[in-house]
Length: 249
Image (spheres, rainbow, N blue to C red):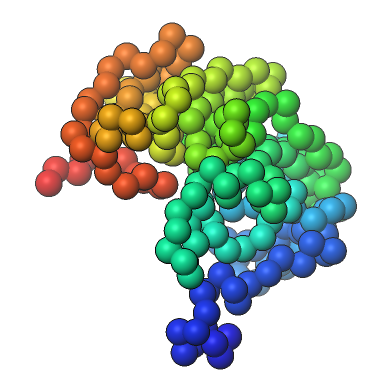
């Protein structure tokens, strides 16, 4: 910490994962400050940056959590950027073996005993960066970036629609030399179902040095994009974003 304070080392050098310690969930009550904070241990180490749909099923006394899980993780060189040398090699970061591809796990916690009663690795290609309709409520569908390519798992080149009940998935690959950004679900005005809307993603083309927005009708995602909007010259990769219906610059 002292070296970091004086600018002698990177912030990522301050942190390290204790992979001998099992991961756990900490449940913090949002609306009752007097309620008990619960710690729910798992049976092994895991690291999770991004959660998919998480909701309480009161009919089954269960809390369901979908998380994009790293089975191991080493801080430093995230996304291929070496802060010390200023070198950038995103392919190498995804093939080093220090950070295996993120996988989707579904955890079910018993809200009576506050123990994990079930855990399942969802049978889908490696995924991260989930986006879905709603917060803290049941969702049947979620959208992800696919982390699967011949050279490794990063940068992301797929968009994935996943049915969280059947685990059936639809994968759209943007192609060689291209990188997709986090998918964003936008509900249709007057939507008649949870999944009634549009999905957008900014796609970066390293070969043509250009970028574009791809747009899908979420109900017919498997048919491919319904439109694309050119953005001109290549822009920095968009990691996260938000959509505001009433924004008018």
